[in-house]
Length: 414
Ligand SMILES: O=C(O)CCC(=O)C(=O)O
Ligand SMILES: [Fe+2]
Image 1: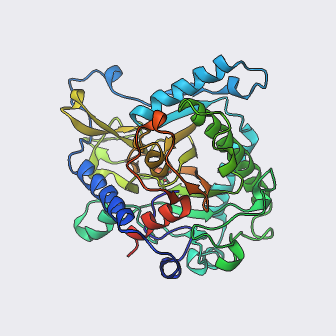
Image 2: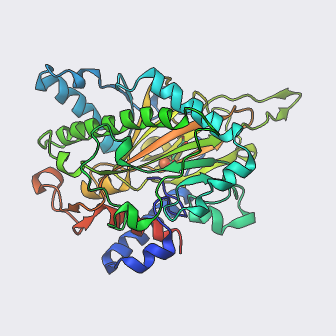
């Protein structure tokens, strides 16, 4: 899931009382925060001007259509898995086409995002406010959480002191899972949902007719796609295709509707700047939509409206004087953006990369809606190192997936 200062799944005070933490996990968490800080400190906001655009790193587009064909030979699937591997070894970001999510489901969920943020009254939003949910489910005003603690700590001195995003969060429930689940779903702390709170907070049918059905349609499809993709990830690591199946029977799957309001164009010498996908990169007039962060779980599947805003901190390279550089993620309508998150990076012993990203609204940019889905394995699954011949000798201790994510969340909460 996203790296929120307040955790989407659980109230920190409640969860803090419940679990114990080994010092090595705390050291790992501190190292992750430090990595984020040091990467940001040296980052270029644009590439050196002498670098031709086509030699800059980008986000590969992978057509995964053939992987759904039950008659596809192993060669066809392996060719797709190899493209995934290449992307994961470098930035961990790629986009997928022919992913099987219907146009109706994608358009439907984006439409619901628009309705949610514009059609509900302030009182209705207040009723759904995340403060009523011990699981941090529901409506989140823009200033309720900060994804990067440094943005908050720097407070008013910081150019980007506020994130502009507004959100609506919900989590896995068996009724949203086309398989019906296995009845074993637990929250991050290993407790059953009933023991943790009332679960997801949905707007009533009267307020937003059809909202739940549209969410369910998209969520069911994206969940099944995530399970499918995890099989391709297994192949990409030279593991058996079904290697991860047993740990995705009641997976963690937080999803959010996000809304970034449009930013007015700025007059420059009598003309105005327009949304340009980030080419006119005047940092002074940019607004931070969502602070720089990595995601915590296994991987994220992101659907967004056609407006730009997502930026990726590409790792240092000789082309950029060995400095990391912010570049816009391409907008390719109909595709989904996939990024490896920290838990999978850890599980692969650092082989697959979880890369820092953020959302910036530049002058003249229209409103942006997005629907990230943060896919985790079953939160109560005990995760042992992957085979040594695949990822080398692991530097990490076995841990439960939920415990890891919870610890990452705590680091930005307390
Ligand atoms: O809204 C976007 O485009 C990106 C969202 C994101 O990175 C997140 O929620 O973790
Ligand atoms: Fe993210």
